[in-house]
Image 1 (cartoon, rainbow, N blue to C red):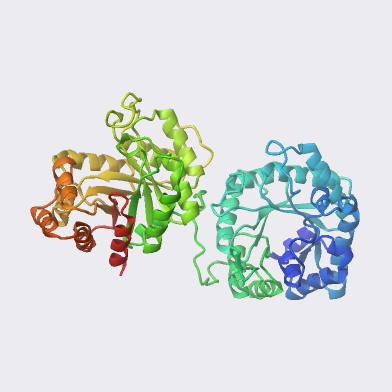
Image 2: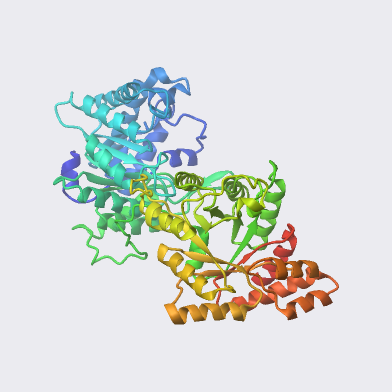
Length: 626
């Protein structure tokens, strides 16, 4: 049976997971699955048989980890040839017993070690290890070689070279499949995007290129389309065939077991979607079973002449922007605002020393109360504090809540601004609030450098029109686009409304995604400013999170009113605070009333706790949520 002859007849269905099936039958993850070819051959052969009976036309040998490096961890590195040959024999035996024409693919996985330049194993050493395994597989009679679940393009290129060198010794040509796995953000572990992967695999000489493992079918459908578009637009007449084998969704640990959410029916639907998207070989990876493959077989058999999108009604959308190679979901804050849901953001200051215990405790309290995002200020009042990036990272990892990084332009030259943006993105931070920043003259180190190369609108433009498009300030590629969701400052009670309107227009033109305002105590006046702006310049068209600064005492209220620029507290509110027996309790009531009024037009609120009274803010959030 020949791969190319089979592909000429339509989409080829491959098998599903071997490891999932073995683990489901009692084999622990600490055991060597490949050794089972020698110690429990009947178990391996039975799984092959079940996949063939389910309709698989191509099965992978149980040799995913049968290279010298992985086998060495189990003391089996002297049995590379024996284990690989046994794996092929078991697959052949199962195929013969089924009386069906089935292709046998020699399965090659990663070496399990890093190769240069990211590890100590040299390229020629890696190629020799791959060649050793491939030689055993070819000698045992495989129909093709499948190199799968790779995340390092350096490594997979050595594997392809090894397959080509060993295959050249055969009389008949040997087909080579090269498949890469991606992370949640649509990149490989080393940061390569689908376009780069597709070009690299094709140029390395793979006959079939594609993606496996990663997430569920939805993610892989998007990546498959991107790879296909990249190759189609390369100017080459002959494109490689396309391969896709998704996991049954993202795994979850339930009761000590690894569970996958996608059921067989779902995979049946996606078999047609993959077919319509141009896949030549489809199958399943981790979490899939013979039931998943049987559902895919049944779906494909409905359209023996091929998958025509006009004929098939999918229970989900298969449309994707083939030119969008970021493949990254917007931040939770961006998603919530896009959905029109009221968002609650709370500001926290970084600690002045090394300890983050109080910070984490406060963030946990706020998150439990219902805060959607924690805003982390950067050196507020020009006081020396822990890096805001580090705080965002710690809060996000330990508390599990979305964060917004305050990013002042003051004190940063153009070189540092761009380096800091790359660092923030590498830490997984996506929400950026661009501000000018407080002058160092008022802080701990008044003699510190206070220069800057960009004003806020300039930095917003750099991020939205530069970094988010994959370019730095000079127009040089940064490798891949960033995915920042950028906020800007806005005053809704400015002393000079005309000047504030001009600033707003500049920030909108630069590409601001949302706005955070100074504290609002007069919702009607704030709304009036927006109405005046929209009457003169058109809709703002961006979500506004109105600033909320809870009052805690009469003294606090008077200080804000008289000494903080841009803050005006109505006489009625001051009178309420003076009359209250408990200023903090009255401040909570006032804040809740303000938020209820702001809900009429604001997309959310931006709460600034005073004196670390996170307990009061948690009470406010719970009241608003309820």
